[in-house]
Length: 267
Image (tube, rainbow, N blue to C red; front, side, top):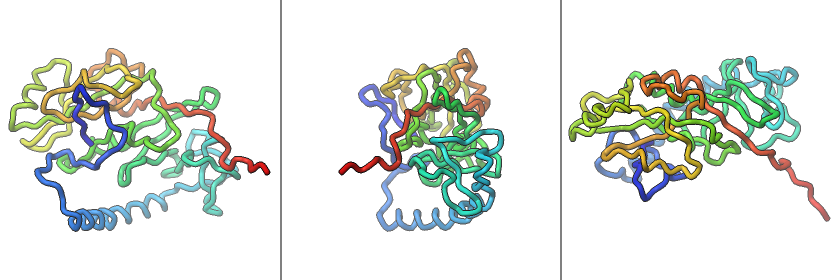
């Protein structure tokens, strides 16, 4: 979803589902329920296919692909359908997609989550790819594609975006009012493959420092929505035109020592 980076606002922690194209009027409640029903009917077969595609594992291996899945993370046992952990921590569940890709779910329905590249249990950190961003780049119909702020996809999860990351800002600029044309003249911005005919285009800006408060209003562009995407600290000096590679390189996340799943009850 796209946000306006106005000076008086930080990026909101809650989200409203937005299509990239501009909507002129709100949907009626009946229409909303109809759309949700259609989305569910469309998405359910994909959910079932993905479930059959090997998200469960043999607990004795404690691995998914080349990544060891240890406490506090946990997998699901393919024999029992239950957690491989005797006392699983909420939010640390990992799906072993295609029997090789350890994946954390997104907080946003109908949007794919994060593929784990590696985990450092000593430093309580891991690198992951926001798979939903790659889905947008690979979408056949970009007019129906949806970008979400990465931090929103982590809402309610026990993970934090590490401050050592840099950020890539994606701008959704309309064509008819000349906003997109003006953005293209900015040498700090690079065009992307995401556009919708003569309606709007997405441009990228690289090398934006992490802001602990989530306020990126200094990078706002008049008339353009924006999404902030964390990218590796090693991308310093990278060109914004390398946005696809930056997505694939992933970014660093951390977690705190979790509380016991079931705290002891004292008399």
